Amino acid sequence: MTLIIIKKVRIGVDFDGVVANTGGLQRYVARELFGKDISPSCHYSTSVREGNLTEDEARIVFNESYQNQKYLTNLKEQPNAKRTLMNLINSGIPLEIITSREEKEFDFVQKWLKQNGIYVPVKSTLNGEDKTKACNGLDIYVEDIPYQISALKEVVPRIVLFNGYDNKNSVLTKEEEKQIEGIERISDWNQFKI
Image 1 (cartoon, rainbow, N blue to C red):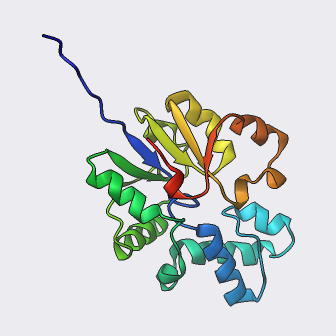
Image 2: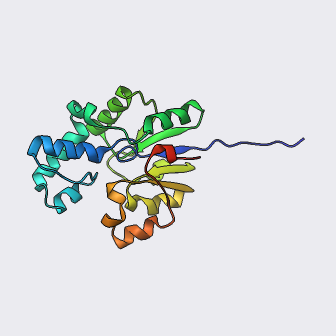
Image 3: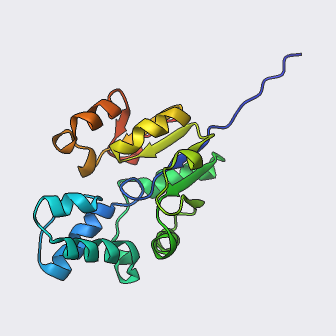
């Protein structure tokens, strides 16, 4: 008699830029508060560097976008995120959201997920420490930030890069381009395959 052991694939996903279109929310908040159009970036430095916001304005936009619950309904999911994540969970596949958000920002994420009917466990790495410890033991991790990829490749066998403003080739440094070389990319959760 042969014993066959089937291991379930463990999946982790980032929240900002992967499950939710946080860059789009920041763009909305910048228009509402300051009447300024910014790139749909999840990065504070990008909005300041592009000269659209002052440092103080950028800080306010990012704090409001990450914490103010009046904007919960303005934060949109990435294409087909809810359906795909819930299908994976309902199929018995272990899945969790791993984010660097903390305290008020983490509460915002949990409320947004509940409000949108996305019932996926969420883990915070707290204080923005790198995600490698939290991702250790995962089989797949979906990320959108290129500079996270190098460290994640050391502990996760398969990395999927969710395409967004922050990882378009036109905004990447040469080093970031090298880090994501050969990494599978998706622009819609319908493209995600196990």
